[in-house]
Amino acid sequence: MSDNQTPEDEGATPYWDYPIVHEGEQRDDYEWIGVSGGAGYGTPRVFDPRSRVVYEGDFDEDEEHVQIVETDRRELGDDETLGDHVAEVGEEHGWTWLSEFAHDHMETTDHPGTNVIDREFERRNLLDEADADLGFFGSYTYRDDDGRVHTLEREFEVYTDESRRTQAGQPVAVVEEVFLTAEEPDAESRAGDAELESRTRRELPVDVDADASEARIEAFCEEWHEANPEPISRTE
Image (cartoon, rainbow, N blue to C red; front, side, top):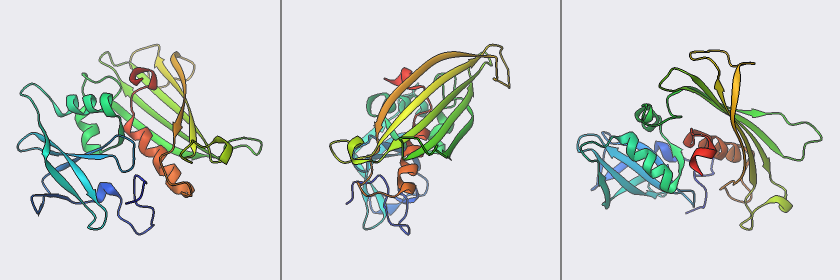
């Protein structure tokens, strides 16, 4: 098994399209939650809506499916929502990838920062004199209980030069993040009327093979952005 989060071959199936197999049967009624952790393929987590049980699984790259591990199960409590569980796992292990199903269940006032009304990620052209090798931009826009609009903006600068790589040979992404809050509730346009809540910078090891393509590096950065809708300052 490779150390990538997803298979590198162009014709390979992304892990979020892997079918879920439990006790020898493919379970189309189970829902993907996401992949937690960041080492290797991470830990797939899926949800059985009927029994309200969250399962961990193992990737079977040869058979291209996820095998449920029966002993690694967690039944949600009577007063516990799936969004509560997703937030708890995120705090303990982090999410490498989070499904739209999970995002939908986190869109409650109990989890600030996940009432998302818009999400964006795109590649950015760098200036010729820039030191970085790749650039990306990501953002979230969401509302709080009072209807106030918040914006989370991230600039990714990725360095692939040998001198900037980690000891494991991974590229490094420098993530510059700003968190803005509109001064007036229900403000749709935040230009000129937003208050800077926080500005954060962190270096993020890009968990891909040393010879990974630019497309694979971009996919990792986008997956990380999608799995982290909260400001970095709230999760560290």
